Length: 446
Length: 159
Image (cartoon, rainbow over all chains, first blue to last red; front, top):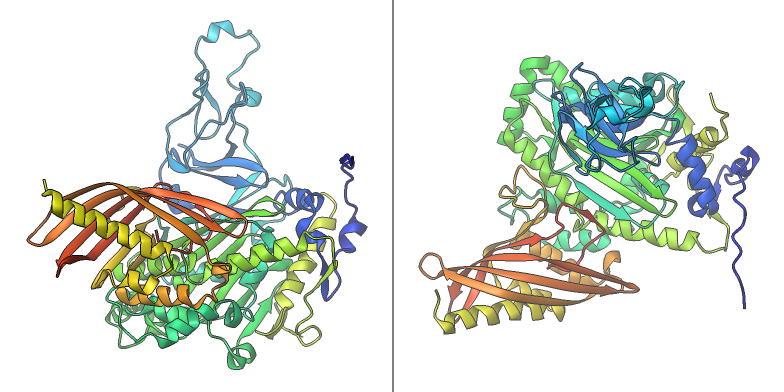
């Protein structure tokens, strides 16, 4: 009889990590080894700035969002002092999880077990039967508070947190990717955006990096999404009464060929960020003159920005702006995805859209429609992506290979002031992501 | 309260719909819908607004026909192998709405088997049915999935 003896948990060295990535290949362990995942949680999700909330969810004192940061369940709160705090969702008394809602408003967070109560900044508000605690017990003692973790900073309403006690400035991490956040906000006629209340949470049985790579991969849609492209091609135009043909156009847009592969440009930035040009060039989402909603929207936007300013803002057509390690923003469709790793082979995707304040209501309806068409569990597009991510994971867990290929376009990319540039048929973004990955995982603690 | 015969005919209509989905006759399934019929699966419990609140599915006949073609192409990756389902419909309560139209509520359970995975969906259906000839047609079907606002993997076959 074979007895499985667990191997001691050996820490990975920097050389181990470097040994997993070649310029044009990656070792399967990068996706399937739990020890690699633990190191990622410590050195990527535990050290980089991680998006945790949008300030439109935290307008009033007591407003909170529950989410994850590395392996922690956290509450992102707005306190009465106006500041935003990130707290462990855990009572310091007996260790129980306190808040079981994903968002809401609470004057105090009260533990249901023995009724210790905490203010939104984590400080202790009250304990029942105070006199039974020792004299040394202090309300001011941080060990009696909901633990504040890490640092918080925000960029124009996008709240980031890090467990790193001495992080590089948020702006240094975001680098040129602030452009896409700027562009999203600039598109609002009132200069302000709100995250929509409704969103999707999708789960896939695969490593978190697979989604990030898929988001930078414009080669796959012709193959993966063909089963939706073909019926959309056969369907008559403007047959739907619900969405001005938006769904059909989005399906059609996944029919890429040589023109797109060679026409679209990919950009990879230091730090692992990447983006591509617009891939949807038709339909109601592209602001055509014949569309009365787009005309009203542009009139409203031009009032604030002027005609030239508006043209500049609407002329930005960057798709799948990937802010490493976990944020994907599409400003022109008001969409955002947040990747949350749960384990080496399990990942959650939080899929959101935004309202442009001052824009016609129909603009928001279209953003909601986009969210459903691409991000719903019954999406005719993304469900096939998820299937492929899961099949990759299944293959990568097998002890074969062990190298997988990221060589397409290798040696053909060029450089510009911001980073690497390539055609859409290139796997350059994955190589950029893995360069950053090695750098983060092998960096000594700051 | 409806007469027994009408109640029974409505129940049989819902059972027919479930059988067509289970047997993969998706084109026949779509024929149960009015040309302007809508299939709606909200993302939020109690959701009344399909425009400002995201839906898991909010599609009319034209978009559903694309979805059905996709189901029948058998090339969709998420459909390989094709899931097998058992749609159970029960607790059927129907009432006359306007002339010739009926409001119907029902509980559902759907067990879906695909490859090595088995999933269970449940919730409540709400229908607006119109009488057509000696049967009915769906003007609106609202599928209130019990865990509509939960965490989901990909879903393929309509509930």
